Image (cartoon, rainbow, N blue to C red):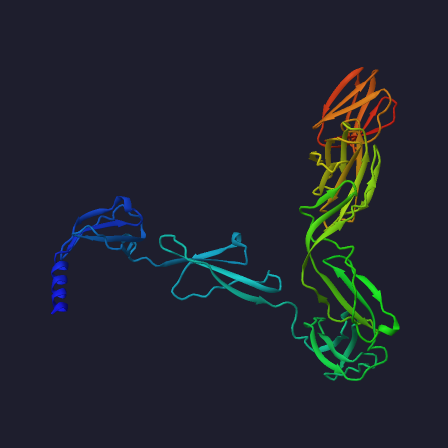
Length: 491
């Protein structure tokens, strides 16, 4: 009785709840939605005359007499163009590879064959790209088909030669076919026990070489010296290998190897720290090492790499002295390496460093290890200039981040003047600002300014006093009167 009564009350309560309002909108125009009273049967005419041609969405939701809204639901419809009801494919266009500029087009027939000229194409794989358009000029997607243009006469396919090698391709030997058969007499007497590879390639009469193939075979007998370990090599990160020769008593197995963790080449120098007192650099890094053993025949085992472990890696910048007018040439500090330059000056001196290659990192420090800010300029001829003021009697420069393709680079510093590379000529003073060269003389003189390519940029008479010139950043040779030519750096 209780259940029946509850059911009856529920039915009475819900009977009073009816759909009340319908809202609808087109596409994402919810803010402009329309509403009307909802009934048992509902028909609504919607104006779509302002809509563009194509697919659209009709969104709707309904509320009940209590004001509660249903979840919105969406229906999609197509607005088509009645003027193109009889539309169809009308034209074609095709081209080879990516040469759209040479496309060929024409009317599309119900059944047709394309006669594509491939006579001028190079041998190899090519792509035919095809588009079709309807009578309204609207294009479909591009259809791609790949085809092969054969090269020289492929009838000369008789195999005539073979190249083969054991383990090492660098020791490949030549062989020949006889009556269509290939016989290789390979001496394996000097091979060590274990698995080896036989690699080979065959060539036909036209000189075309096949892809290499590898066959594996086992040498069961133990040859003299092959079972002995004679050396091992180890390395840290991507640094150089260090080789250790083993004494005769230790040549049966490689055990209890103790490797001193030193001379580690860090993976990166980001976030390094410079200690001016020790003139050393340190950087926190993740380090790994590799190990490989070698037998009496010089054949190496598979290299074994350790797990990475955290380490504060010391880096020695190998500081070179670099003082006024001097030039130092050194190995380019590539990945994980750093080159230091040490200049002795008076506090407050203006310093101009010139590096022969652009794109490097160069940081500057005083004798206390504090950073000195430098103004950096890239020269038109490819080098870079760093202008700064010394704050202590010693200035340090740390150079790193060179490209692996770079072998050597040079560095020069000028002290006292703002940018001269060589010492001043007596009676003549050179001063520079950015793209500006000022020359002050104590007498009238003939002036010549030449770039490093030998082109004369200025040749004129100048009077006593100061004369200025605007020049691109670079190194110039300046001759004043009968004095020697001075090399001047304009940042």
